[in-house]
Image 1 (cartoon, rainbow over the protein chains, first blue to last red):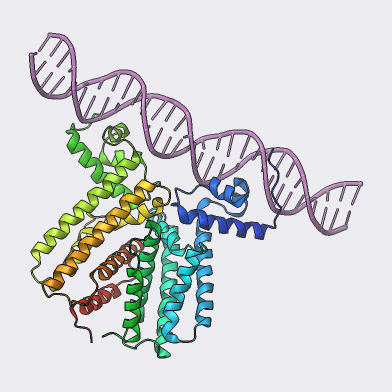
Image 2: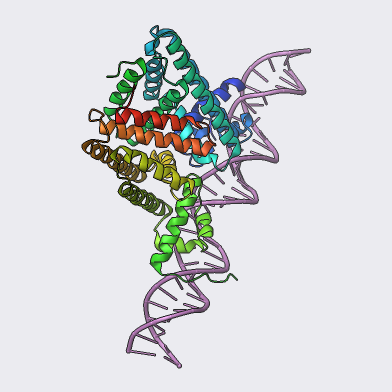
Length: 202
Length: 202
DNA sequence: CTGGGTAGCTAGTGATCGCTAACCTAGTGG
DNA sequence: CCACTAGGTTAGCGATCACTAGCTACCCAG
C-alpha cells in the first residue's frame, strides 16, 4: 500500500500538474508522452490528473497557455529592465535563451511538437495558430516601439522582422535539441541582425 | 478472405512502402503514426512491412534518408537549370516550395517531427543531426559558389547565411501547417534577403 | 462527536499498439 | 510434375495506452 501524498488544495495541485506536464510534453511528442509519466513525475496517481483535466489533450492545451503566459511575463520584465530601445529585441531574445538554458521555459519545444499533432487535431491547430499570432504581435510591437523611440531604423518592416526573430528562435531550439550544430555562428547571426536593425550596416 | 495484392519484386515493394511511409509520417508524429496505417495506405498488410524493415524505427530512418536524397536531386536539377549565380539560392528555395505545394516533398515536416523524438532516441537524433549538417553544407556550398561566380557579395558569411536560409524554411513549413499566418510578408522577407545577399541594399 | 466534501488511492477497463508465428500460393528450374 | 523460393495472407501475441469505478482518509463546519 502506497503512502498518500501531501494533500494540496485543488488549485495548487492543478498548477503542480501543469508545471510537470509542460516539462514532460516538451521532451517527448504528445503521443510519446504518457499520462502515467506525468502523474509519476508530479508525485501523484493518474486519477488525480483526470480530476483536474477532462482529457490528456485538455491538459496539453493548458500547458500551451501556461507556457506562453510565462514567456510573456518574462519578456515584460526584461523590457522594463532595459532602457535603451536599441537593445529591446536583444533583451527579450536573451531572456528567452537564458530561461531555456535554466530549463524553465519550453515554449518553442511545445510548438514544434504541437505542429506534428496539428494535422490531426483542429483544436490544437487553432490554439497553436492563435498563440503564434500573439507572439508575433508581441515581437512586432516591441519593434514598432523601438522604432518610435529611435532604437531601430524606421524603414524596417516590423512584421517581417518579427517573423525573422521567431524563425531564429526556431533555429536555436533545433540547435539546442540536436546538440549545438550551429555553434558560435548563431552569435554572428544575431550580431548581424542587430547591425541591420539599428542601421549600422556597412 | 482478402484478395492477395499485386505481386511486386522485393525492391519495388520496399520503395512503395517507403514512399507511403514518408507521407504518413509527415502528417502525424512518429508515435502518432501507426504501422497499420502505413500498411493500409500502401495497400498491403503489416507483416509485409516487417519483411523489409526490422522495426518501425528502421522504416522511419529509411524515410529520412529517402526524402533528403529526393531533395538533393531536386536541388541539383534546379541549379543546373539556373545560369545566373545571383538566382541560385532563390532557385533551390523555389524548387523546394513548389515540390512541397505539390505534396511531393516533406523534408522539413519530417525534421520537425523527428525533433520531438530525438530526446528519447539517440539513433534518430544522430541521423537527424547528420542530415541537417548535410543540408547546411549543401546550401553553404551553393552560397560559396555564387560568391565565386560573382552572384553574391563576398563579405557575407556563407555558413551563417545558410542557417538563415534553413530557418526560413522552418518558418515556411510552420506557416504551411498552420494555414498561412505569415502570408504575403514571407515574399517580402525573401526579397529583402535577396537584396542583402546581392548587395543591393540601400 | 459527527457527517459531508474533497483530495487521494487501488485496481482495473477496453482499445490499440508494434510485432510475429504459421500458413498460402503464384511463379520457376530441373 | 514436383519441389523450392518468395511475396503475400490470417490471426493473434504481450505490452501499453488513456481513462474510470469505487474505495479511503483527511479536514472542517455544526
